[in-house]
Amino acid sequence: MSHPPTIPVIVESIAALSEEERSQLLAQLYERHLITQSSDKTPIENTGANSSIACDLDILGGEPCVKGTRISVELILENLAAGRSLNKLLYSYPSLDREGIEAAISYGSRCDRGHTLRQLFEKYRAICRG
Image (cartoon, rainbow, N blue to C red; front, side, top):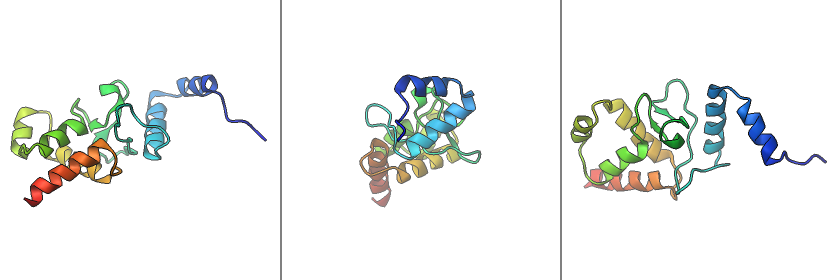
């Protein structure tokens, strides 16, 4: 019977990975809910080549963000849940586009109900239903 690797062995193995491999590994771990971010952050989904959401440990500590920006999914959903319009968001954040907002909404809709981003998505959806 083999024992699971110790934390130092795991850390050493992860450190040996390329930056891209580390990002992919973290995305898979978050997606499978094997690890979570602090403060009830949503697990990060697998961010494939076609996704507009990216997770990079060097940008906002790995929080899901719109690709190519420092605009987090949480920030977008908080604004929408507070009743802010898409046009106001686009005006306030010039690097953001509609595709990025739609990707953030989609991301929030796929989160587990207990996660912060899902709760923000539900508030936004309630506003849309009026």
